[in-house]
Amino acid sequence: MAAVVKEEGTDYSEAAYVDSQYEYLQKHNSEGITLEELRRRRASQR
Image (cartoon, rainbow, N blue to C red; front, side, top):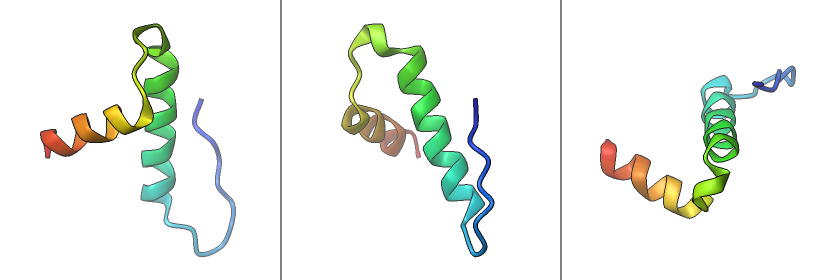
């Protein structure tokens, strides 16, 4: 579930990115993927 950000001046694209990281890690926690590994994978796809 994505978090709702209501603070003024917040970059919503950054909040959406963080939410997507959290959701991915929750879905794949049985694989033992760390946040650092996820960042490397996403950086290599760019």
